[in-house]
Image 1 (cartoon, helix red, strand yellow):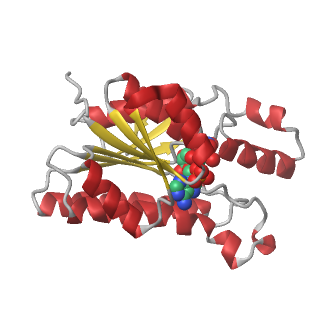
Image 2 (cartoon, rainbow, N blue to C red):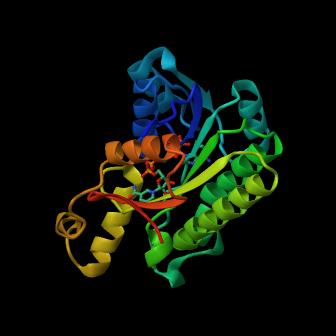
Length: 247
Ligand SMILES: NC(=O)c1ccc[n+]([C@@H]2O[C@H](COP(=O)([O-])OP(=O)(O)OC[C@H]3O[C@@H](n4cnc5c(N)ncnc54)[C@H](OP(=O)(O)O)[C@@H]3O)[C@@H](O)[C@H]2O)c1
């Protein structure tokens, strides 16, 4: 089975966590990566680590103007829509609408904008869009406000976009990844702390129930695999135990 290598990829949320690992794996494979995030210092550190193969774009991935400018300037063959807000961890009655809807305004909005731009520009035939959903879309996330539903909406957007690509003969593939909760990133460790406290156990004890722990490098490997294999499925769960197609 031959895997496609992309000349240029855009990775949103490339400053840390999964996004940084995804950028590193793509650069190691010979792809030039344009990494988008808001914190300049983190992007600078990634650039120091990865060298010239990494271009930092400091900005908000939910900014429609930035989406258009980045796509037109870099013409990526691969979009990895990974940026995500850290959910406010609290039971429903302790949420405001603002905290409850946080992930809709970042995660979902950015997947909507970049997916729409991929279709409208459009990206070249053979291009791939990988959107980061979450295992929470299947299981729910009762302490994370609207997180699970925001990630479920991303699955719908992926499906709608794939259908439009097909109808328009655009040849753009849309794939969603649903990673398992992991303490290996800042966002994941906030989730772990919240659910551990709810169960009345310490985070280390809670984490034992998540073993084998999913690492950012495994997520990166999964992204490279699903992006490069045109015979791959449309949606995957990824856990410490590996990559599994959904359905
Ligand atoms: N870790 C887990 O357990 C887990 C499980 C399932 C799914 N996921 C999903 O995987 C993705 C990555 O999560 P992670 O754990 O790696 O989180 P993380 O370590 O907190 O990294 C999130 C990244 O997204 C960026 N970001 C957030 N808002 C942004 C915005 N408006 N514009 C541009 N960049 C933005 C952050 O940079 P700035 O703040 O500098 O902008 C950061 O680089 C998220 O979509 C998350 O929901 C994570």
